[in-house]
Amino acid sequence: MGSEKLRLDKYLWSIRLFKTRTLAAAACDSGKVKFDGSQAKASKNVSIGDEYEVKTEAKRWRIKVTGLLEKRVAAAEAVKHYIDITPEEEIQRLQYQAASFHTGKRPSKIGRPTKKERRDLDEFLEE
Image 1 (cartoon, helix red, strand yellow):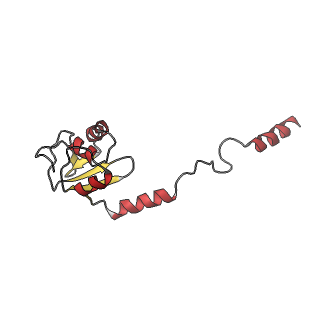
Image 2 (image 1 turned 135 degrees about the vertical axis):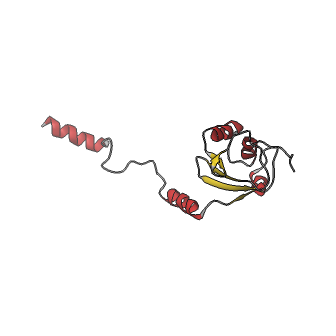
Image 3 (image 1 turned 90 degrees about the vertical axis):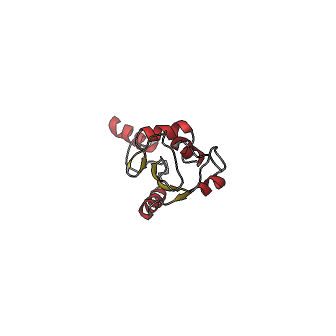
């Protein structure tokens, strides 16, 4: 299943929380990965039963290690090696965020004028 020693950045990459190992290491260095409330280094050895708080771009994870992975595997397989114990409030916040997703269209009456508004403005200024 895995060896006795496994670096934290390699584990976070292998369970697919981060796209690259470099991103996982950078998250550890910048304090986005915590173990027992304090910043965890990328070189920290992961043990089964450890709990980590991981802040990714998508969400704040709280995971419990159930198995060690040496190599990156399919997402369906990776899920078997940790338990997602993210608090319910965080999950609800994410659902609310998804509901208020930005459509890309600008809100009316904010920003640059439309072509029609611009023509009307030019007409008004010519008079």
